[in-house]
Amino acid sequence: MPTYSYRCTECSTAFDIQQAFTEDSLTVCPTCGGSLRKLFSAVGVSFSGSGFYRNDSRATTSSSSPSTPAPAAAPAAAAPAAPSTPAAS
Image 1 (tube, one colour):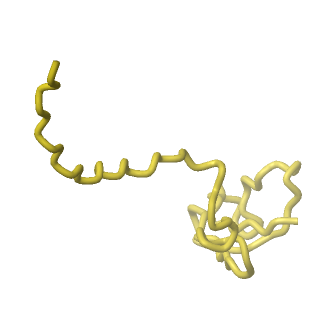
Image 2 (cartoon, rainbow, N blue to C red):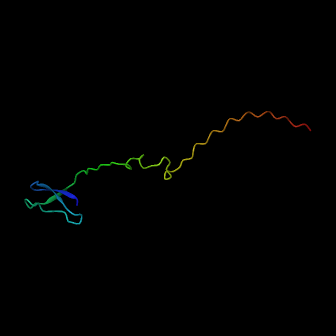
Image 3 (cartoon, rainbow, N blue to C red):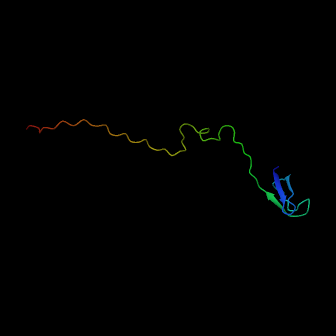
């Protein structure tokens, strides 16, 4: 079950409570009867193991990436053609 943090808007009492997702949020302060606000904070996430980095889960050649054609090779320099002589009749 997740743990939620609440703070009273009147007496500033803060506390954490475990609640199921299906339970309604608390609205009344147990200390003074004032209204409660749910506090949100950063969640600590640890990415460890393989598969979390770009180079961990990809093969060297990926079929899902768009293929780019290889650059066309420059035509080989052709040797200059010998001058043609008119054919004798």
